[in-house]
Image 1: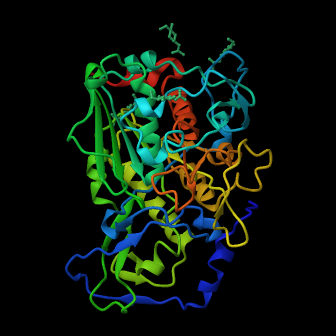
Image 2: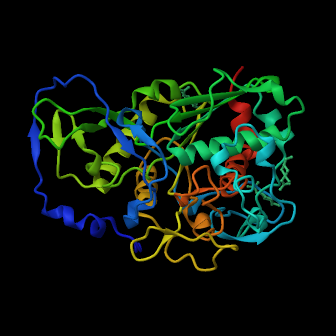
Length: 425
Ligand SMILES: *[C@@H]1O[C@H](CO)[C@@H](O)[C@H](O)[C@H]1NC(C)=O
Ligand SMILES: *[C@@H]1O[C@H](CO)[C@@H](O)[C@H](O)[C@H]1NC(C)=O
Ligand SMILES: *[C@@H]1O[C@H](CO)[C@@H](O)[C@H](O)[C@H]1NC(C)=O
Ligand SMILES: *[C@@H]1O[C@H](CO)[C@@H](O)[C@H](O)[C@H]1NC(C)=O
């Protein structure tokens, strides 16, 4: 597949690094976790560096790998215009004055950094676009109806800050269908922060819980092995799913993402290297490592998840819009761009689609890369809690992540609501 950004070229200079496999005893030095600077996501492909998030602990990077659906075979729920199958991820944005679907200032679960209007953005046009798949429509969002269908369920998002954004969006969307806002609360009274590892919001009138697990790599971080070279400060165990995966099992819906952290700047430059079994893989490239991690995730899904109960989704790479020669410039436009400029493809998305395709367990790929590619108008830019660091990776809320949820809901409610009716008790 042709990709505008190629990992192999991006990491080309790494080729000079000889592939070194260092065996070491399994005894690990006492756990330490280095702080990592969270840098922009688009780095994946572009290497652009935008520091916008806080330093974070290596230990807090955990993810799990695995997915499954194939993009072109998606059947979208039967809606007004749909005739036969429909690839909901192929389409365009059309203006719709009935959007946005909520006001972030009325939603305590939308973090301040994503509330662009409250942070000074003046133009509101970017909130008034609806995604229109080519051959069908996404059902109109109806908070009350969805809340009823989700009664008694537990939903969990797992991944990086883009997962947190989708988690926030889902809660804000559903909150519009709740009269007593106080009946919706974070179970531990925690505040949403960039480094928090776990959040759980309960809609008590519906006995519905929506969780977020921060696990940016899905696999397990660990300390540097004893005999490792000095530059190795920590490792990512590609063959071991994040420890917090235990908590992901007993859920009705699981939505994963990963990708933005699989970059040189967030890994090697922070002293984090890959590990497979007892071996340190110093020369292993990021794409290969990402694939290995996703394979680990896939076998976890197949061995640990009862897919009769749990619906599993994996979101593909969320397009970022860094520009300029060094890809560190962030110019948020007023309108969506008509040209996707190759941003509709991503090596990360390709790996995700590929790994899921090979799985036996049913996993739905939420292929959001193309729809996001148009939305150069919808990033946080300088309307964040830290205007000095522009952000062309994260999205304003309300905004694009709401569409990810509208698509997700359409899957959950499709097939006559089979999914939702299947869960016993
Ligand atoms: C979708 O709707 C059309 C017309 O209402 C119907 O003929 C078709 O069988 C439906 N498809 C599915 C998958 O339910
Ligand atoms: C959102 O709510 C705030 C506070 O009530 C209000 O000032 C603002 O105008 C609202 N924004 C929109 C887009 O309606
Ligand atoms: C899932 O459902 C299928 C078909 O109803 C059944 O054969 C299978 O045993 C179920 N698996 C589990 C783990 O319950
Ligand atoms: C959908 O639900 C209706 C009414 O509950 C039922 O008659 C119909 O058979 C269902 N269709 C499928 C495909 O399950």
